[in-house]
Image (cartoon, rainbow, N blue to C red; front, side):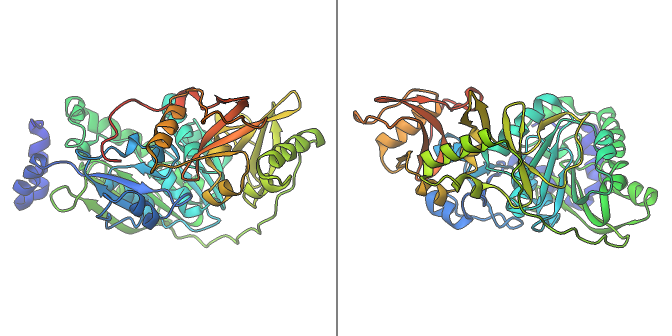
Length: 457
């Protein structure tokens, strides 16, 4: 691997006697990791299902190393069920250090593709509010897909600039993660293509962007709130210098911790994390209210009819909702939204809450987000559910056929009329609709299974 000479000179000055060990790390294989999605499964349960997950990542209790030369976890239906997220091990540290607690209001400002957002969501456990944003439109759509695949309900997904968000959410957030765009020096081993675009001019460009992003944090954070600033680069200009400049500009913040992950000292790529605390007096906490259903009677009845079909209980679908919001209908879309959201008019909103589905001709059509937000226990209580067994090769192949978008059937079974939930080991994959002996596939086209060898699970 040929590294840029100016980069090597800078790193030798920075590391001094450790430089040879650092340089040798580029001759070592990269480390691959994945993280259990605790909204759906515990890390212990996941390690039992995937026995090759033997070594835990020390800074993330839900994270595991795995050998990507032998195993392909992204080819198993469990991945499509949202049981785990494949994530570079070092990238799991920033969300851990933010120390999110239930009922926090949390902002992930530069969130796509969403790995850190999903960590934050798991810590909230569908309480409070998680606002995720990416300024790039294409990346923000990928972010939304991941948020929905992993069963997150207490959500607002934006495609906005930090400046515009700050106009709507002043002193709103308890915790903010700024995983800033950076020159990516820490990812050279994982993604050698990044070496080709690196230059000192690129570093300076990112320094400017990072300073601009950080300048809006004081308006967004509550008094007493916590901010984590992170990058995947080694450059002091983008790391320590950036943090020091922020502290000088905004003296109400104090530095709680700074930490680097070096590839020659830990099993992970290069990462930098700083924890910053707003030292102003903490604002009083607001009380939590219960849902108030604001849908018209026709929409409520349609939801109850659907709930009756799937669970033989007209109220069961309402038990899936978090307890600090309400149901609304927006242009035929039925959403749960957090009660503390300000008016969003004027913002680029991809999803204002948890999308249950749509109303079409007085009937409820469930969303993929709803399927993915149903947990294992709730899935088992349903009656119009197709339970596939991953230990049965025929069932496993049928699950993959479903994920590819194919119409499926089971040994001449005539399906009851209506919607059916397809699951693997009681973990939902998506919806299908009965057509006598067949189930018409309703899996979203943009979510479909990607071809490739599964390799040992």
